[in-house]
Length: 76
View (tube, rainbow, N blue to C red):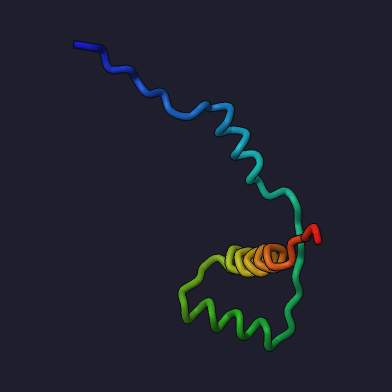
């Protein structure tokens, strides 16, 4: 009977490098007027969103990445 080889998993150095690449080091400040803030608060209370920063970050990055994908450079 052959010995089963132990699976060690992913390289810890790779995991550490990936973790460091996801670290948020850059800051960007947004200002909302009263009606925009009221709409954001209403959305968060209605859909039970607790992390407004994550909501805004996800919405912004979704828009940015979709625009970049639609308007990618072409050769001709």
